[in-house]
Image: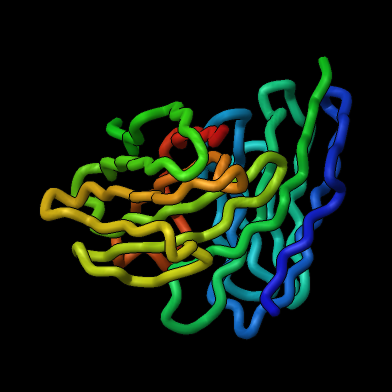
Length: 111
Length: 115
């Protein structure tokens, strides 16, 4: 069964304290792995797509990496405005629109 | 920039009632997706439409139906509502050619509460 597991469930960081979020996945053929940011009461906001092991993407203080079994979202010198839930999702190969989401990591960054 | 518009934002219904949620995609987007997110849970894929035809189907109950209209807006119809249907319902849109990128644009969601 295709599955996404994210850890930790919650993470509290001091402003400037870098860390990483983990996304482990099992899927019958990976078309793509995606990272989204979700603020409370809002819809997910697209961050990155990764397609193959070894690929990396960066955006401001965020950097996403991918291996054959997991992805990491590295947050460098986070700021309070980075506080949000970060969702990982995978899409299996084949004719499907479905994204399989993890339950997310709730990040809080304190000044 | 225009975003995905969902209405209503909040809806309260009694058990066994019906509800209709509406979604207006970003202009020129031809693909619409519906997701259900329960409290503290991950979004679950319900159904998608491309060019007004059903494209893919997920864990959508038989009590639910959806369609995409000629102006590309979509409606999710829910009947015989149950307490467990209480959730945030998200609509997302994309360009079909971009769906492989996973770059879906989500609306702010419709919060359904079933009493």
